[in-house]
Image (cartoon, rainbow, N blue to C red; front, side, top):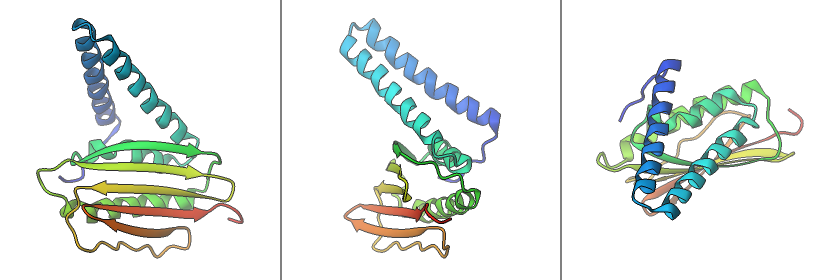
Length: 177
């Protein structure tokens, strides 16, 4: 369940593997005459690629890389990304602090996941003219308390607990930076 360090070659290998799986699934549906399923497969993959393209509008390359490679570096996670990016951030200091926090967050979450479970992670990234937020909801969490605080003036963290899942909302302001 540990962190895997990725270089460009590793990233390309993981990406090729994922794309090959998607193409094989599509081919299987076509071979079986399941055209509705094949169409859904294409639409799902297209929507996923659109979300990744939207993430680039954030203009935070470290955060984009971290979110994009989460599943590859930590195979215990299966993430789903949704983006609503109306304003770019372009503040390198926020990018560095945010990635450091996200890395510490998953390091603290991993020991609280059932070792045989695949932890679903719903990630929503939003920005507008006034601020930004990243909401991460982890499922399959078995902990009575998780409070991973942040001591930065650049971001605020809110933790919400429900049965079997934890939600972390990391946010900050854009105006006046």
